[in-house]
Structures are given as C-alpha cells and as structure tokens.
Length: 301
Image (cartoon, rainbow, N blue to C red; front, side, top):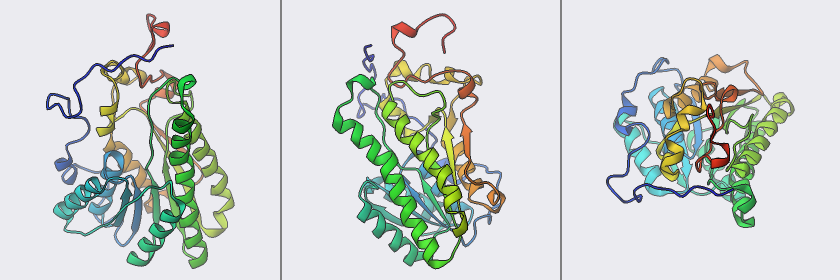
C-alpha cells in the first residue's frame, strides 16, 4: 500500500491555504458560557501555543481563569500570551518544554502550582502525529509518538495528582485524545497511544477518586486547525466526508467542551470519553495521508 504524495504549495509559499480559526476573532467569538464561570480557577494547558490548546487557553482566560501553558515552541507560546493580554488584560504563565521529559514536567507543575497557589484543572492537549503506513514506521518514529502522546500525558497526570493528594485539594484532568473507536489507518502509532490514555484515564478515575480527582477524555474528530498544514491536499479534500454531517469541526468546539468539564457543571462526570466528531464513529474512516486506490469504491467515505 503506497501513501499518496502531497501535492500542495510549500509551507513558506504565501499561496498555501490558511487553516483554522482567525486568532483575532478568538477574543470576540461568542460562547455559551457566562464571563465569570472560571473566576479564580487555575488551568494548566499543554500544547497551548496553537490549535485547540490556544483556543482553550484564550477562552479560559475570557471566563476568568488563571492560565498556564506549555509547548515546544517559544514563539507560539508568546503569541498566545500576547493575544490573551490583548483580549483580557491578563498575564499568563508560559513555559517552553517537552512533556516527554519527566523532570521538566515535575518542574513545570511545581512552578505553576507555586505561581498561582494551586492548579484546578490540567488539560493534556499536547501531542504529536505524522501520517504513514504502519508497516513503514521506523523504530524511532514509533517510540517518539508513544513517548509524547502516552508517556508525556502520564507524566503530567501523575505530577498533578501528587500535588492534589499531598495538598488535600480536589483536582480535574481533561485529556484531549483521538477518536480511536474504529481505528485510523496511517496513524496506528497515535491510535495505540491515545487508546492507552483513554483506558489509563478510566482506570485512574476510579483509583484516584478518594483524592477527589476527576478524569475525563475528549475525543475530537476532524477538527480544522493549523495542524491541517501537514496533510496532503488529497486527504484534506475528503476529510469532511468522514462524518454524516459532512463538515469539519473547529478548535472552539473542543475548547467549549474542555471547559464545560472544567466547570461546576462537570462535577458529576468522571471516567468518561466524550466524542466530538459529527458522527464519524458511525460513518467513515479518516485517511490522513490520502485514501489508497484499493479502498476507493462508490459510496466509500
């Protein structure tokens, strides 16, 4: 099975289509939530420099929360910081780092805790992925995705839980995963890691309940963000056909769900996986590198 080649302008080409929400509109976009819903709460959001993480950080700040973000690219974190300052007048905590490093994670959680006097919600949004037939994965490529998406998420969860346990304060974790119910060809490593996070979360939702720690997962389907830039045009042209609504979601759809779980309205939701995919799980399969000819038949999504 051959992965189709990308046919699109280079990243630096100004003719390349822009993807995702206009960041300037994130400060004005209408939300169903009241403006003080998260007043006094502190959220630590990984991958906060782009896409769903950036939208979540901006909306959380608009709703009154103290926000800390981390990510691998300082310039992206600083841009989120600038936007939040512009939209809300608030300063946020930023840290350039990788969640693959458990010592860096320990330092991050401790510093955020000390800076704000605690953490109320941890949003594990950071992750990595690339599209390739599984039979061609390199050992390094496999280990990289597992390390970021599974191990990195675990380091973040464990460090936050230790703080909540030792302080006697309640905690909340929202893990942004992937819709893995039907698998995802060309992203087997990501599916393996995210399935691990889902069932890790279900297990710990019970194990950590005595510490008053809730844990839930949000599983996005096809969500159009800046991350779409890594996919070939052939794949992008049919992404929306993978759900019966035949449309793409956006980062705001995910941000509002994450913050619903972080609000008082989510107090009785624990150990769950909330899928936001337009019905994709009942309908179609995403081929992030483009559908191979073998599967191209009349009626195929």
